[in-house]
Amino acid sequence: MLLYGLFVAAHQRGLTRATLEVSSHNHAAIALYEKVGFQQAGCRKGYYDNGDDAAILWKSGLQHPRFRHDLTDWEFRVCEQTARSGWTLTLPNFTTSSFRASSSVTSN
Image (cartoon, rainbow, N blue to C red; front, side, top):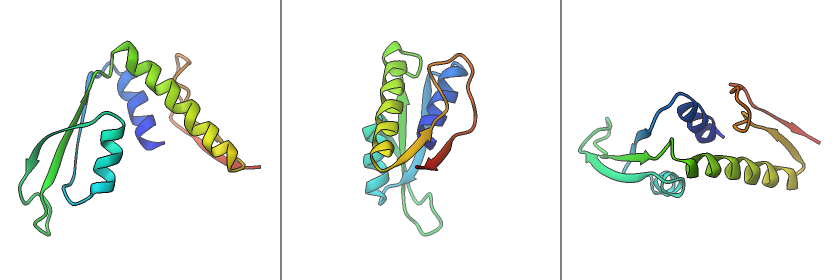
């Protein structure tokens, strides 16, 4: 949900790219970010206090028409999955012109 909200806000603000840094040892996080389109672009050696390197990831195309479609699809899939668990999820609505900064989760 957090990534979704950040992507919606970035798109609506006209941003074209997103970047992040994550521990190069955090394979689960890297896999998640790659799943949503981030690509590894570099490494910051010894970035963290414990000496771990940081993987630098970038995602471009935030203004591409396909990206808007992907966000709408992502919203549908997340809401559908939570509904199967008996939850109702209200995400910031990307399909309207106004972005609501809050989201809510309720149990049925």
